[in-house]
Image 1 (cartoon, rainbow, N blue to C red):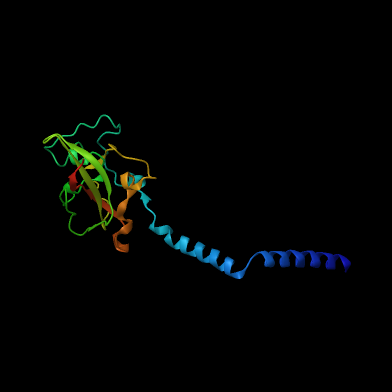
Image 2 (tube, rainbow, N blue to C red; image 1 turned 135 degrees about the vertical axis):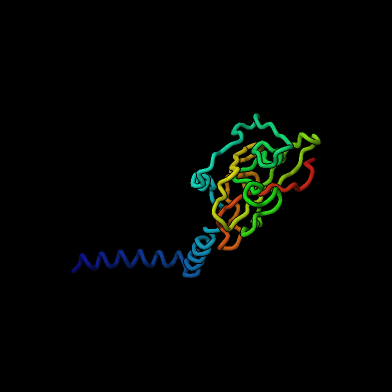
Length: 186
């Protein structure tokens, strides 16, 4: 019996000590923060590299930063000047254009940006790459160019993220990428 009293009194002291140092509001606040954080987890960007392997498409373009030689004639080629930092399927090959999504897809509200040199007029332009979402991956004109790409911790300059995370729930699937000109880079 005396052993149980010692054990009980030790547990009681620990419980009282913990109760005096913490409050219900603090616990509820931490629990609420955890629940909100867990609810926001699906909104984080997703790495696109695995999906590109699923497409069974041939990757072309250049992997080194100094080797990209832009041209201004063939918009469906990976070395077209607007595609200097594109990672994905060109919408121009998938039923869309350089600036519009194919029918049945939805334009992502977010983008990544790059400065691309146009050899035709010898100017540098800011390109806002935007994903078209809502259909399975197109699988045609798959390009991976890394000119000016920065690591994922600078997401606005990273092309390794599926940018469909801001689209409707039904449109979270990546299809292709457009490359509209935003303006001249200064």
